[in-house]
Image (cartoon, rainbow, N blue to C red; front, side, top):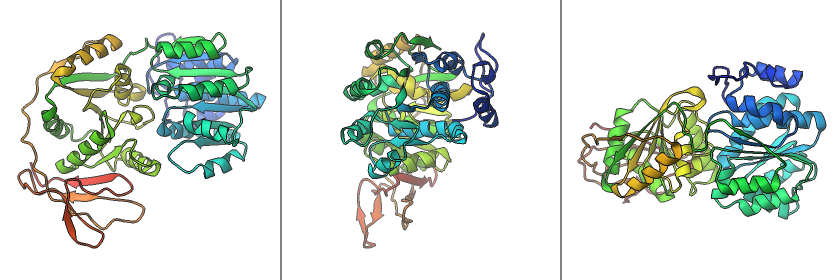
Length: 446
């Protein structure tokens, strides 16, 4: 989590973390880490949570929710022993939460472990034997390890559900229900989400004790500093429009959302053909590939990342200047999470959505949710469709999986090719990717 001492406060909020009842030793650590001024969600959640009250927190993404539940959880464990459990919908968010909690908890001796799918469970089982203070897990992997007898909820006295609406959207309700039923009734439960559908209200009613409801912004509210625009464009013209926009915003870090895994792969390939550095993250990538892609995007090795909604929750990358919805999401609520990847922690950003003529009704649904009209812009003059350039794969560096290509220009008419294992060339419509899912391209001129 980035330092938040410059985050703009809402009217009526306290000035410092020292006003919230945090223990002196813990407060010293926060100060040393640069955390001085609480965000609105932190200011309102922490005092009640430190008293052990159940909490339902509704706030936009990028507002500091991890520390809002992390500080009370860590302090309660330090003072009263016990253990903590954090449930999240995606692997990326689990790793992000662990990093944030360790940043403030490691100086206090905090031990944590992440339990996620997509990787072998053996290392996770070994880590559980070290009796960690906090477990951060996706519900599916946690339920599997509980069933195998590797994890028990004995001693867990604080449970947090982060991005709860997304966990229910992706079908984790049965696992969440079993986990909460197996946990001690004498526990503190905190639930955080950017939206509050009926399913979440029912979950809170069934498993929480008179929770404090803290709503920083009405559910569905989009981030204040995001400039939002819409282009109505035919499906066959979307890639040409994307070409134009990426050229216009060629200095920005860009996150592009596709509705499907195959679409994300195709978009990333075509962006590579345009000559931009690009990577991709979606369900067809292995965990190591996803981590390499995210790391490359964070350190600016890749200016552009193409993702499915798996990345709408869990990407905490500073200074994403532009979010592009190449496809509208299936659920209007996911629109809020997508555009929340930019304009984080008080910064400004931009979100552009491509809308097919048949999808205008979907825009109306989004407008009703966010209570804001979205401006529909006139299409710019679109560039000619690019011909498929010729690519030659460089010798791959073991463990890095790099791919670099050189475009022969818009009018080459040649199909991409790559060097096969024996050194011979064979034609293919898609350049081969290596294990990192990482791609680079260079434009020979527009």
